[in-house]
Amino acid sequence: MTTTSAEHQSEPAIVAQGLTRRFGEFTAVDDLALQVPRGQVYGFLGPNGCGKSTTIRMLCGLLTPSAGTVRVLDLDVPRQARALKARIGYMTQTFSLYRDLSVIENLRFVARLYGFDHHRARQRLDTLIAIYRLAELTGQLAGTLSGGQRQRLALAAAVLNEPELLFLDEPTSAVDPQSRRDFWEALFALADAGTTLLVSTHYMDEAERCHRLAILQRGRLMAEGTPQHLKHTLPGVSLLVECATPRRAQQALVGLETVRSCAQIGASLRVLVSDANAEPAIREHLRAAGIDARVATAEANLEDVFVAATHREGQAS
Image (cartoon, rainbow, N blue to C red; front, side, top):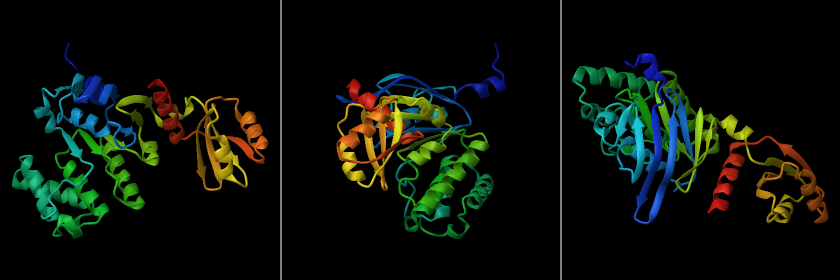
């Protein structure tokens, strides 16, 4: 049966089963199963060293899996990695363009790598320079750009070939909050135009922006779904504790069996508990410690989800 264009577009951009990568005795990615829909921003959330970058490199065809299967844009990876390269973009965690070349020289170099002729390169570069506000920087050496300017240049280079799928490995780790916000606006513009994006991050606020999210810890997939779904299905309850001595209250709560995490936020404590009915017990425990506190249920956030997911992983090991 012939696959129609509509059927093709409804198929996931990425399907991975049993994806594993070992480096000697160390397992960096452990039996990962992923399905990334087309035209969405899909996030990898996790701390440094959890396997995000290794997974991206395998999905790009840059690293051979130790086990498992990968299909990206309906191509088998790594067997068809060469064909895949023309259809994807990849923005690395560290700035990877030539610092001793100017902005325009870097972009022209990337265009040559993709085999663009002079006319096509000029048209595409003019478009990208306008979109990413690089007009006043074209003659400036890349090594002298600010963090936000380098980020815009790196994104322009990553999408120069108009990729169907764009990988971004912690792309905002070295820029200010305003540059991060502007960058995400650019990502959503790409998604609106039909590009699928896979973005790794360790920032909770960035993870909140993704259409779907995978939480990784020690190379394992701990949770997956939309941010709202993950918060609504949180295995536990978030509590807000307000008192005159939050530091003392935190010390009193740490170590309780039902308490998964306890963090001070300003003059309050945010407490994640495993028992949905723990609110009265927490209040009574603090009262017994001589602490008069107001304890109330709080709306779950992604930090709570991450703590709950990694807590389960810690128990399993």
